[in-house]
Amino acid sequence: MPIDAARALAAAPRTGEVSWTAKDVLLYHLGIGAGIPATDPGELRYTLETRLHVLPSFATVAGAGVPGVIGALSVPGVEVDLANVLHGGQSLTLHRPLPAEGTATTTGRITAVYDKGRAAVLVMRTEAADADGPLWTDEARVHVRGEGGWGGDRGPSARRGAPAGEPDRTVERTVREDQALLYRLSGDRNPLHADPGFAARAGFERPVLHGLCTYGMTLKAVVDTLLGGDVTRVRAYAARFAGVVYPGETLRIRMWHGDGEVRVAVGAVERGDAPVLADTAVAHS
Image (cartoon, rainbow, N blue to C red; front, side, top):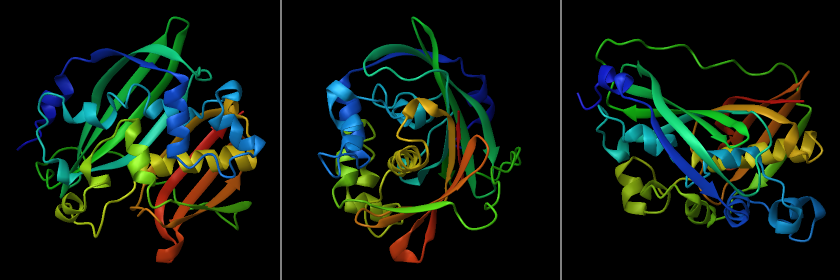
């Protein structure tokens, strides 16, 4: 079996260093659709270095997204075909607001390997800290098709179920045709998001948008719509990637605002609101 669960779990944590500049933050923000309209004061918080506020989901690409998903696939005991790999979910806990420029030490390790029958799920946890202390903790859930069935632990259910009642707010966000090409410059160069031939081999009609791009677009919509544009109010953010997005589609983002938490569901408008993000929540102050 290409995934040796015991070996992956026993692997020593990997420590590295990541650095980023305001240019990296600006590129990330543009990659998730910031800057429309270009002169809107709310958008300039994301696109102008003299006013720059860092959307917390930038943590998933800081230092080109290492370790994250790529880190999970390079752990001893994990040898898989990239065409069978999908990002299944992402959670992020913020310990304090992210600086526009910085250097952090990251420590990452596989914390779980689940046997889902027809697939395996790897859970990669990364902790980041700088000279002033902890910055963020994130967990990437990596879904590997065709690698399950060894009789291992299926793991807990990540599903919370849909929120009750009508959403408090609904917004739509258009995914540009070139958005995956721009977003990949922040670090994830998986050909699934750019190469039609590779996408076809992976079972898709054409290249798909990065799940983490949808993740960032959704968080920005929540911050701008319900949190007054204040990125520092975000405390944690988790989502399950329930389906793919194709560049050129429209995201319908539905939000339910509770006490200290926004529940979110995202669908692709052109495909009858086919689920894209599910079990999604933003905890805030």
